[in-house]
Amino acid sequence: MKSKTTRRQFLKNHSRLIVSGSLLTSRPSLRGYALENSPKRIKIGVIGCGSVSHSYLPHLAKSPFAELVSACDIIPERAAAQARNFNIPNQYPHIDRMLAGAPFDLLVNLTDMQEHEHLNKQAIEAGKHVWSEKPMANSLAAGQTLIDLARKKGVRLWGAPAMVVSPQFDFMARTLAAGKLGRVAAAHADYGHTGPDWSSFFYEKGGGSLPDLAVYNLTTLTGLLGPARSVVAMTSIVTPTRTIRGKGEVNVETEDNAMALMDHGNGVISHVQSGFNYFNPHGHDGSEEKRHTISIVGTQGFMGLVGYDWDPQGVDLATENQPTLTRYATDKGDFVWQMGASLAAECLATGQDIPITPEHALHVLEIIQAIHESQKTGLRIPLQSTFVL
Ligand SMILES: NC(=O)c1ccc[n+]([C@@H]2O[C@H](COP(=O)([O-])OP(=O)(O)OC[C@H]3O[C@@H](n4cnc5c(N)ncnc54)[C@H](O)[C@@H]3O)[C@@H](O)[C@H]2O)c1
Image (cartoon, rainbow, N blue to C red; front, side, top):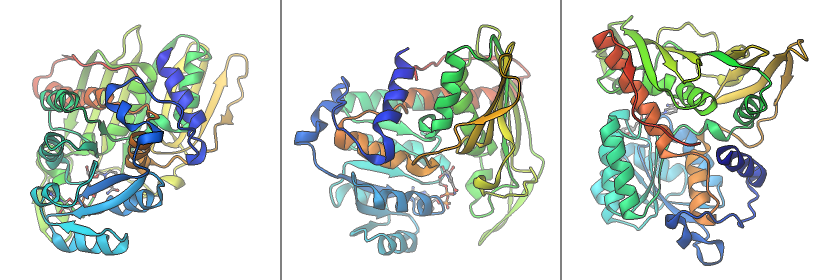
């Protein structure tokens, strides 16, 4: 299958950031970036200098394919602090100023979830490639418009998350492709904690545990089991008000508790749950999570991902031929969840494509939209979008 070859090839070639540079893809937008005539480093403008920038910027700063050119935040002190921390020569308080300022190639969008859509659009219109934190837009229609616009402008658009490049995802995909689980029947995934307390957008319309947390599990399960065809779901608000640092009490306007069933076709059904009211002894520290957060079962086998898909620790497998649960794929290599923007820069610099697609991110966005629709109407919601991994 083309999809598997692409991911395998990526993992093989991407071993610890040593890149052959020989895998120029046939995508027209990449042709101008062949190694011999490409800039060595891709110039990067980062917008949003809050919490997640503390994970992205150290990774980008170490990338041999990235040059941090500009930092932007509507809270100028944040842009100034990160510019100082990472030797970024330019800082701006607004995207208009950044786009009109020092030239750059790739916008890395790390702003509030509800801000991504209009900032991504503005950057693409200005001819910039975009790596966007999730979600890349606020609706299926707007996401599709962004993909079309990027194609028209000849630039690349990528949406987080990046787990499909982890060795653990690859191991699970190969195990399924080899038929080791027999006829696959069901899967379950869950992710929750007690919720962020540093920004209110997580609890406002367009926020919630689905685009913040379930997005990882939805990406993994659709990546492994194939695009979903329809969704039924329930959501609720467990905690109607929250205390946000520096802001005080805010009303919770969207779900903080969600469960969804997806039909992947061929009889395969999966279940995903997420929430901001889950006691979690490890908080946000994924490396301490040792239970199976994703499990897949079929007529001849069971497979459980140890830890989170964004911080995977290994994969446990038991099959008819080898019924003792055995752990595999315990080495993460250089995979970390915050590596997506660095991979995008590497892709632009070398022409070696990455198996992270905006169509997959758009499909997950449609699932999230359908979950809200199912809760509102009580109906099973058919899905339109699809993707090839
Ligand atoms: N914090 C994490 O650990 C984490 C992990 C993975 C993904 N994410 C994702 O990263 C994104 C940001 O989350 P965060 O936790 O860093 O939030 P945050 O509130 O800490 O940071 C967001 C920053 O964006 C700035 N901003 C908002 N609108 C802007 C605009 N129009 N122009 C310029 N700057 C703007 C804010 O001032 C703020 O500094 C979200 O999509 C979130 O889901 C966060």
